[in-house]
Image (cartoon, rainbow, N blue to C red; front, side, top):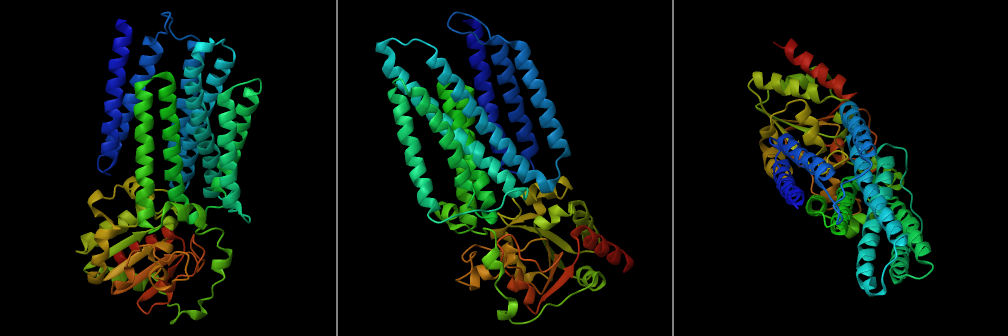
Length: 476
């Protein structure tokens, strides 16, 4: 009894650390501390369970070598993956790890169902069994969808899977979901074919996860990652119900609610409803959209070399840098910080404009710049920085495209119309660094590139920024 009380106290402490960790994660300056606090809570919850848990008969956990073996393998794999992952691959890793969480919830449900199948149940306990089966099935359905959907998201983000859709797909998805719920009802009702219904639900849930994510366009991936993350949290919470495990329940609820809130925030940042994201195929493939010709744009492309761009920036009073996915691809975050430091030594005020959906996952640019020790107070969110562009001498856009595209405000036929963007065109000068004139993730041309105040600095971001640094130093 004393052991169980101690374990519940440990669970309470762990739950508090999860809440504190989540609070600290809300600010870049405390995010690292929050991650460590939550990890500590998870650690004591795991080891407390291993050493203190006892069942109704007073038996401790068995198979400890297997448990510690799994912990060791998981720790090594997770450590190496986190140490070696490039910032460009961070979104893929987030999707992959999130999928593993969904897979855990799925496997828990399968094991618990098999346990029920192998245990004789008194007729008077059938009602309680039905409730337990409902929890098992809900956890399995949501976990399976999160697992297979996250794997497809991982494939899309890594370029291994293309956007694919076919006629009536959304209606097929709705029909498939209804079939899954019908089969789940049959599994709860029991009977000789209970196992058949259960595994049909499993198979169809995995299929639904694939069909659910497959048609969603690449530009919507930040929203999809947040949504799938909330699914994994909800599935984990069902596991907490299943085992009457308070810390698992609290952790699942926190992840599920945080993922849901983040999904809502991301949708708001794109000025789109979640339903529109799920059925709109925004940025899907980009084939048709990319075909839009630049002939309809007024003006022409004006190229600038590193020397002229350096002069503009050195003698400016205020420079705003807009980071995008191209910055991550080139691994140029350290060079952009060096450029920032150099400009500030020349008396130039420098800030970074952060769009909520820049990059391939929520907070991608914040994490990228934090890696190069950019001061957190220089990272300014879209709502705060937009009024400042009108008083800015030079805006340097590095690898961003759709988040600065005026079509979002001016072209009702554009797939990004209505999405809030960074108002960079209000600045005195705009320098855009890109490898080429290739369309962005949404697959459409950018009218900003043809504006009279815009100059294009072509080339790899890291190389171009290094040239800027060298040229500014040469000016003395």
